[in-house]
Picture 1: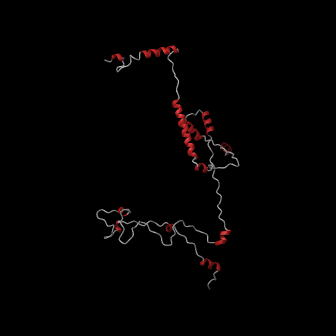
Picture 2: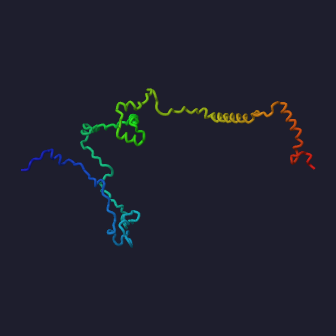
Picture 3: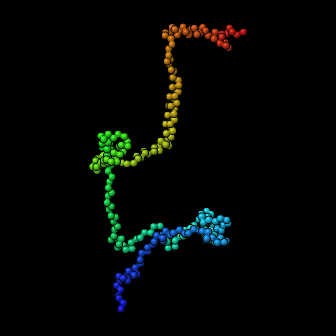
Length: 248
């Protein structure tokens, strides 16, 4: 006498089982490339002379057979294959979505590596009469002094206190005065600045510089020298600067 099946077993039998795909189905293996043994007489890739298997593995050399697409040495999956990452969802419907919540477990904190106390290690190395770089390196490897957590928190700079009404970012520039733009006010100001600059340059050029060196002790000596220069003026004239009396 056959045993009576429970309604739970019937439900499990008719319930749709989740589809599980293997790695080979998601990422199919590459297709085996052509070899010399696969080449038959009359094919497009038939060659004369020395033929190697590497000649049929280069996609730039391999020709497409007549009436067939060019092979790329890969096999495409079936029609029912979905490209991308396969995500297994929950099929419990609305009750499971409302009554279940995925909570990530908190990971234990990783141990914090303490900072090296170079000041203490250098001080102890000097007390041990170790002053060279190799000696200090060996001393630090043997006597590794670290700063405790409390000292490390004290050494680190605390963030500066900011006012509560501080605004971060760049200040917005003032609004453009359209009235000045319509009147060409900026052009007039530029022309005035250029005229003022040119006027200052002209005044500097016309400024007379006084004498920096006075070679005459008195004013009488100056006048006497000018008088002698005027008397000798006739002698220094002429073509050869030897006087006018040298002309024929």
